[in-house]
Amino acid sequence: MIKKSIHYKKYRYISVRVLKDTVKDDCYDVAFQSSAWPRWRRWHKNVDVYVMKELVLRYKVRAIALQFTPPRVSHLIITGRWVK
Image (cartoon, rainbow, N blue to C red):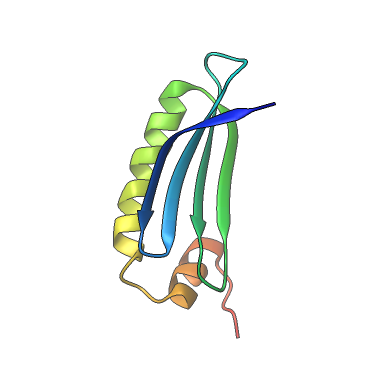
């Protein structure tokens, strides 16, 4: 299955990405992830257009707030675990 990237925005070390399925019309994947150590990722697969828009808005706001925190603190907030 091939996916086409329709939205990619990077906020310092945090990125929000949306991939659209090329076969199905109403099928999207949304990824919210960190590129700095410790890495974390929230991935939603096979969501419709309304859920995709809601998730992108939610993750944009979180990325804007979390971009000013150190990567360890954002890892703690997202995953709930502290990395030593």
